[in-house]
Amino acid sequence: METGTVTIKGQVVIPAKIRKRLGIKKGTKVCFVERHEEVVIRPLTKDYFEKMAGLLTSGGKMTKSLLEARKQDRLHEEKAE
Image (tube, rainbow, N blue to C red):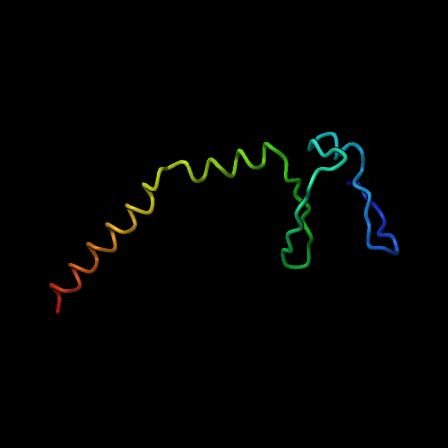
C-alpha cells in the first residue's frame, strides 16, 4: 500500500509507481469519485475515454430493445384490464 500526505492546500502527491502504472503524466486530468467513506481518483486518459465510448457503441439497440419490451408490457397490461 502506497501512502501520501495532504498538504495545507489540500494537495496530494500520487506515488511515482502508481502514476507510471496508470499513465498519469503532467497535465493528466483526474476525476474524484466519492464512495461511502472513500475517495477514488481516476485518471481521465485516452484509454479511459475509449473504454467509456465502447459502452455507447450499440447503435441505440439497447434503447430500442427497452422501448419494445415496454410496449409489450403495455399491451399485456391493457389485455389484463
